[in-house]
Image 1 (cartoon, rainbow, N blue to C red):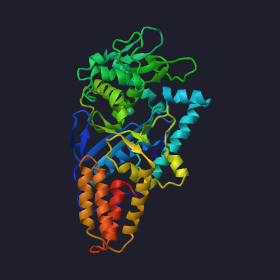
Image 2: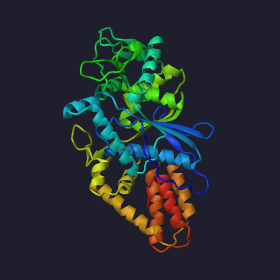
Image 3: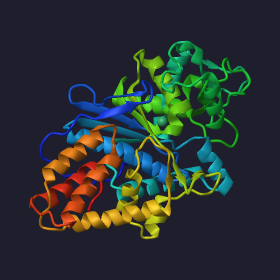
Image 4: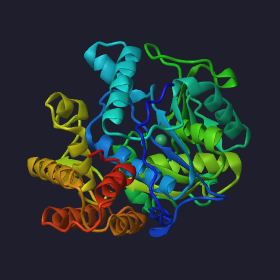
Length: 413
Ligand code: ZN
């Protein structure tokens, strides 16, 4: 599948600061980039039926900043993102609207790409659909069956499940109790009450063909389509190898999605942990309420763009709080970001300001501390305040600060 085009990223002088990133599994911060100057990142992409709301945007911006900080450190980044272009929620939406699911998925994926370009998100090296990955996924489900870690239900549906009891470290990624796992599993697309499973938490690997649903050849699996968790595990293993540096997504993916994907990957490779860092971005609410499709209060990037809201202001607004916090989208948040953007532009257009090198060093320091964008924005605000107040000691500073904000925060001034 085609990715989107890359914005230009200015090179910054001097050395970056190694990124220390919070890992949900170890519940602590650790230096994030992997071996020999390289780093690999897999971010769970959209199911293309509701793209791109501000929750998606906040998640993509979070991992974009990781990507930018790594690159500033001279790390060779390999970034992979998937598109879940076949799954129950996509089919449900297509059925509800009387639309062809393929047309819906293609339209929403195209819109997502446009939004990512507008937000100046660096594109993944590999942007991969579930449908194009089905042969590889089916092969790995066969391997799990052969290893006795997967089983077929004996109700003639052709459905195949993963046996979580075979995974001795199951639960290490999310650190949840079993009752919490059961609650999230039921809430987030799992089927704890499905008859015939060995354990209520066992996740679907392969759904046998049903009347009225698309299905693909699965060899000895029989016709059907893959589950979501095995999709991400197989795409990541195929392109990034058995150990990755960052497995990323919104914090609603902590369980079951990332726990199950890790369990599948580790069962297939025998290597653990699958990811050195499981990184989760907070949810975006709207004026104090959870933003969700069921409440009908999703705010879309494309809607804001159509209303002539500058995408750089949207980006700055979503950087104004820490990525791990659940936070609110409000009119005030956007207005503050718009004012900040104007002031920053006004300051970098002046002939000089206080030290640009010190500002760059301080921004690097803040971002290396688990992406402290709140602190990084405050550093730039201080420079802008001093510049606008008449401190004009460094003639190179306006260009360097503009390049810093562009390269590290992804905000073009
Ligand atoms: Zn995923």
